Amino acid sequence: MVGIVLASHGDLAAGVRQTGSMVFGDQENVAVVSLEPSMGPDDFRANLEKAVASLEDQEQVLFLVDLWGGTPFNQTSAFAKGHDTWAIVTGLNLPMLIEAYSARIDATKSAHDIAAHLVSEGRKGVRVLPEGLEPKVTASKAAAAHAGAIAPGTVLGNGKIDIAAVRIDTRLLHGQVATAWTKQIAPNRIIVVSDGVAHDELRKTMIEQAAPPGVPANVVPISKMVEVAKDPRFGATKAFLLFETPQDLLKCIEGGVDIKKANIGSMAHSVGKVVVTNAIAMGEDDVKTIERLRELGVEFEARKVPSDASENVDAMLKKAKADLAAQANQ
Image (cartoon, rainbow, N blue to C red; front, side, top):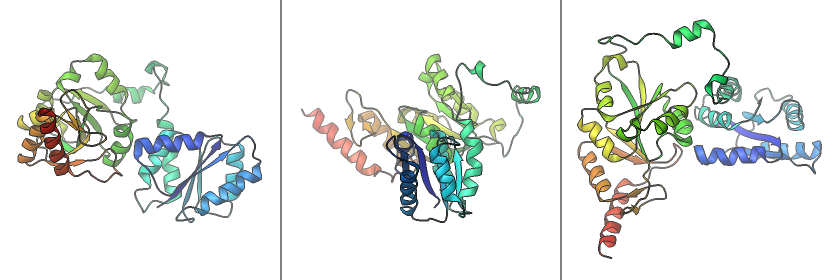
């Protein structure tokens, strides 16, 4: 696995790494080097050398540095001379780091491969609201973006939507989903399936704006998702489906959508529910719904981020039943 060194003035690199762990999970083979006000270039260089020495593989090293021409970059550039397999990318930001984490999962990729990929992907992480402030696209690109709707009956691909992954998450589309999970799954569309959110213009707009670069997000009611699953025009779509509750997932499957696997990311606590993990709370209806889904052949896992090991779903249901029974007897 390619080793990563984050280098910056002050605590920027350390902060980006900490935030990256919140989104993508804790990562091994990552080191941080910070240039503090009391340090000179030689001090920074010494810490840089220690950071590389701490990596499992010193042959493939990727340096993500804050500023081209600053001391961290200058010292890293000097240190990298003679190491032809190393690579340096400046402009360190959170989307860049998340993309690097995702890219290095492929063990065949070198530090150079990942660096070349990050140059474009890191720039995509810079976006603006209001969207009218975005640079104007060329006329040809604008025409392509506003191409007419596909005629009913048109068959794309194999005529059947590819549901690449399904997740139950009270928060729906947030940082972990937009970065870690989307990078892992590589969909070309995120679909939030919820009657409630589909009729809430504010939440709907916020979700659409939270979509990661290059992967549009749509919010649809359950009935619309049932129609989409039967529409051959979506045969070229690789979708990541997000549900707010297991009840919505059950309604979708009962409507005819073929779903055999689902990830439980988070289920928020509320009155009448019991906490079964640090991210999941269940009430009686949740337990019954998940058990019904399993009877229908749905296989569950429970993970916040791809790097986590799955929680034992049987143990979660058992704990939920015991705690709900104890709560009822109080």
